[in-house]
Length: 294
Image (tube, rainbow, N blue to C red; front, side, top):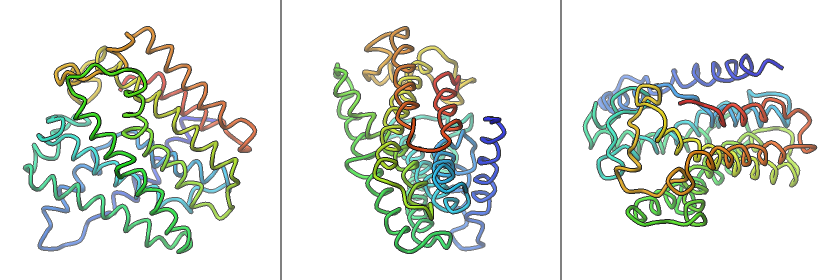
């Protein structure tokens, strides 16, 4: 298996499909421009790639999950736009570019995020690559990840806990909702799109993989916020400390965080053993995220 070639192939499919989005000539053209600006700003596209590759792990093909992959990336982009707003983290840089509200103004960025969230569910609900029943289940999966027991709940806790010293249990709860929830949805959307029905064991394994991957991802993110540079990350560093937030890095220190990243990565990889026929790509993806520098 050539992991990098496989990743680039999945990424190319997603990028091509996203690039065709929101091109309509219309009176609200500036709104579409703002949506495209953030959606096409780059990034690793981890979530849509997970959607495609979990579908492939189950049925041997990525194509049935393409609309779901685009939908999950639209929802992820909406969350980034809103997360950067002055009323949230007030960040001015994202993926090496001015954030949406810096470029277009706060009110238009807010609308761009709202419209991307709606577009995500429209893409899932109207997919012709999958059945209406599958599309309904997919919408439910994504809605759960986005809502009060998912990203919004995690963001709420993250904000109200600013300035407080948190223990491991509270910090883990925040990031299981804020980070892991959408990664879990991405994996489950891939299984939902597959014409081959997943078993209960496969569904549970995908959930475990995503939960552990999400914690490893967040701990690594906290490490980079301390040890990296704005140029390398493409966004401001030290913002967690500036906002007086407890992070895994402030709670444990960098050395212990490194150990935790390795442990959660191992658990993510082990969760797939014997459940899917070919787990090489998904295991390598977990390993590569554990050592990423941006």
